[in-house]
Image (cartoon, rainbow, N blue to C red):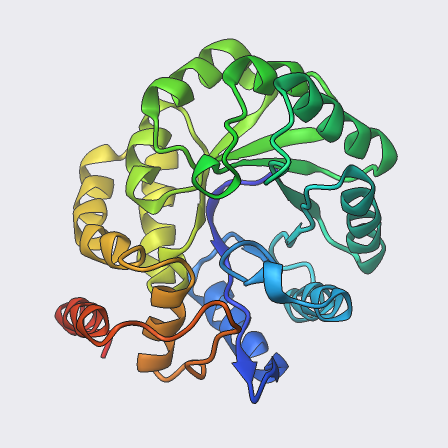
Length: 290
């Protein structure tokens, strides 16, 4: 259901408000460049600082602009199970094709608690669910054994695996087989993860170079590793630069330098340090993006 380069899209702001016009233009550009799916309101979309009405409006805007051309996977995760169910129900009602659910953060449940959290959501909302494992953000790792248990739940269809740990990814493939689709959650691991059996990526770098990110994933899906490897090496400096400061600061800065959005964040996120911004400019210039 979900494969190829799926973009975790930024949320553009203008004078403190969501810039729906800029968001719509970004989505049209991504579809034209070959992006296979849009994820609004993920980490890259600054979901943590969106008000509820803004969160739902960004999802609705993405759904309206996409107009069924590619899947829209709405970020609706929270560290409260009841809150997550409420948000996921709303995303389904708006017309989302799936839901991306981050592992519960801060309260650090046990693996049994993680299992019950996701199972409760899947039973409450009949929508395709993508697990999101990102221990660097949540301070909790969804273990492969837990992923295997969850893969037996009918509408838990995929996992965004962002540990960067290929040993863990291998164990997920071994334990789950075809029961779950594995997507890279770190651009620098996409090539390796797809070589192991992954079906694509939920990408940050795809915000900046959507065509190349999509081409690499399509080649990997076809087993054309030599051609895909060339694009992987091309994208590597960009992948690194996207994380020289906290995501989504570099990616929004890059898009602003490219003239696609305003350079605007919500506190506690702020503009890049001058030295890091210059490093980012150098990378973008070498790639011919500015």
